[in-house]
Image: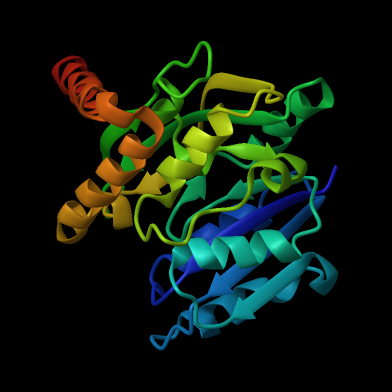
Length: 252
């Protein structure tokens, strides 16, 4: 199986290197790696070029272009990808260890066509700030918010069936994508209770600067899928995540 890993980055020269190294160091070698650089002007592009000299060009693609937002960049990468399986790794994030991709891929050899796992959120100093280990039994529109998006590995043919990311949402398009995915009747999903990714805190969806925009987009998406019950679902998600975080802080 060919696996395509996609990283979208803009002006993150301090963190992009560790993400690239994390992909290149995986012991699963049949990886196509696509980096979409949104016309960085801080030296990020130079870091990328320096890091990737050791990989075969046929399995590595650097696209440097201006995108409408991160999700348009993801869509562009998916469009040109050749892998049967698609995974995302955001700039600054790293895989939990060098065996993660090979560990995940073995599940696709059965009838499974979508896999997700757990994530650790780290501070810039490397301290664990919180964990994302929400157990998922049956995946549906009431449980899909438990998926840590960057831990999701998905067959490309599924994306072709349900459609790519909706670029009208600048912050929460992954939420809408997961709701769409959970409604796909032929999905064979597997949650694995293992850590896939170490993520840097302070991403777009968790930034205080974008909190209001995130709230507005969330409400629009939930209303679309839950109609007049959207407010109950929204607060259910918030309370569930807050409770899990509180329990972890109390007993860590």
